[in-house]
Length: 429
Image 1 (cartoon, rainbow, N blue to C red):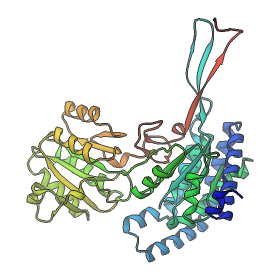
Image 2 (cartoon, rainbow, N blue to C red):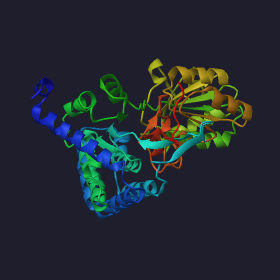
Image 3 (cartoon, rainbow, N blue to C red):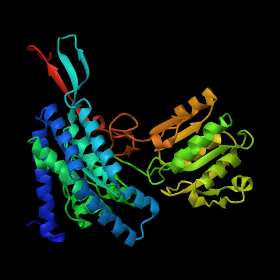
């Protein structure tokens, strides 16, 4: 037994190393698997979810009851909750991933050199991916399916609050793998909620893991980025902004803003800060505030926002750049597009921003000059989702600048290699 085993817990350490070894072995096998076998596995997994619907809902009921005892917020409970419609939607999501073209082996570019060498840049899997996530049990299905589709093995570590739901959904993924004759080690779930398992995953499994993808709150992301000994595909907070420009159509702005905040408040694409141009058409600010409050949203605003409606509570400095994940929005009145973009650069997380404007030049400035991973014109920030982008599903929204940005689907979970074909060429001295 080596020293680090003694420092942790021998049984847990060995368990995690066995998971890692199985994942690495599965990744090597997946590299040789044909596209049809992966499609078959995913379709079988989706059918298993439908067949085991009662078991999944029973497991989720246990998680929901535990969540209520822990007094989780309404937004977190909504993220956790499953019903027949959500399970069916999850199964359909897995099937949609199955229907996509297999990215592995795809030729990204090819060219021929003057000496006759033919060069191709070809997509290949990343290898073994570790995914650490919180709350949402559908991530188990989405992440497992996307990793399999892209030829990667995956080690899933979901949050304690969704432990039973995750286990039930994972069992369906394993059923699909086995039915298609693929190694069950291709999609594994860390079976313990011991927090030290995350530490082992981050610090001790470099020989098995190729990349870590965290999906959760600020504390989780900070820990992963600080402790990980392998590359991290970052997914920071969803501090999303919607800016209502002076040229905005009032009715369009009202529809988009309420949807951007209130459709689902607990997702990372929900607007957390609303910026309204001081020169917006008369009545726009008051109408937006009234709509939000009528929809059940608390509005925390600056002095100008408070003057528009006495129901607006005073915002503090901590409200700018805060991810509420709840029916709360920060509201600031800005002088112009420059002030709006300055606010976003200072307080945003690089996730998603939207401008509501009929002025095409202003919209282009917003889209071109901001550098968030997703920028929208006259559309709700809640479209920040891999499914809505036509990717079937996503593991998360990457806010970093290395490798992938925005929704991370199957294609974003690949790297590439160069394949060079010749006919006896040698390089001159």
